[in-house]
Image 1 (tube, helix red, strand yellow):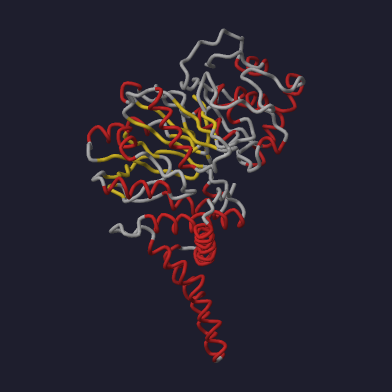
Image 2: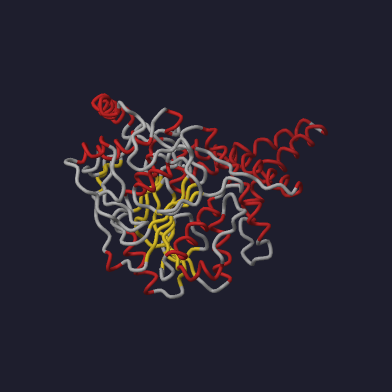
Length: 451
């Protein structure tokens, strides 16, 4: 069921006989099921837009390709071939870079409208969230050039009986148009101010509470994630029963864990024991009142904004809780070493910035991470080089690297993972140094993107 504007002809054809689209309130996601759209990717306010649309974007229902209808059989065949060869993959290049228009994205959305999803052989049925168990709930989705991952994300929210705000950070792939046509309330961030996920989340929850001031809960969701249909009722029930808990999270999984060792590493990072935790990730359900009290995230953090917020939450006596339940599927889509390196650089930047912000806090957040990065990437190499100038025997200190790899291999059950863990300390230190240089120069670090 599609909201508001007239649909492109190919969308109406795929869905069946054209019918008058019912009017839905701004922010309510249309009830449309969605399967994978291979071959496209990427990483606001319904009604009035917070800034003018780019000239290259098309409005809801506008067809930018006059031959879409004629080419539809060929495109369908291309989809089928791509699915067979790529295991229902989501490619890594932005839609715009591959020549796909917003109308093509909508066509693909419609062509799979009645299908169930299938993730690595496991069917995910389209279960509805019980509206009676999720009252006063809004959702904030953030993204930048997420392409079909964003379509998938919004489709997973189709049964949420509450407003959905999508915050876009300078996408060039038509994400704003897709989100608006799906029924989300779209906020487009001003590109004159450096983009950060923290800034986007703040803009989202503030728009939610400005438009719907009586909301009790805010679910944050990254645009490359798909929410589990059973998550919201369980999360809301937890906050209802545990008044000392301000933020609740569940199990985030990598959608394509086996596609690369980097995806598998991410999947393990998301895992952890149920119960009270000291920090959370990006996909969480939070009390709206707590966001008001603390002012949300720190806009200037390019990463690590969630653990930083958790420090302030615990300082106020709030608790963070992890449920032993499925929460979301994430598509890290890290298939190259260079991507993993940049992600590690971003982590090092976050370690340094957040640690210095809260260096007087009792837990001294990420102090141990900084010490490990400094030891393996700077102190040990310096000792080897300095010692070698005195006597060649000092070169034996370099053997500590393979010894550390073998030690980690026993714990991680993988020689590749152990090796990446050691190499990653150099990438993390690069991020630390970048932060310190920008701090001394009083320049603001821009996003470190890995997709």
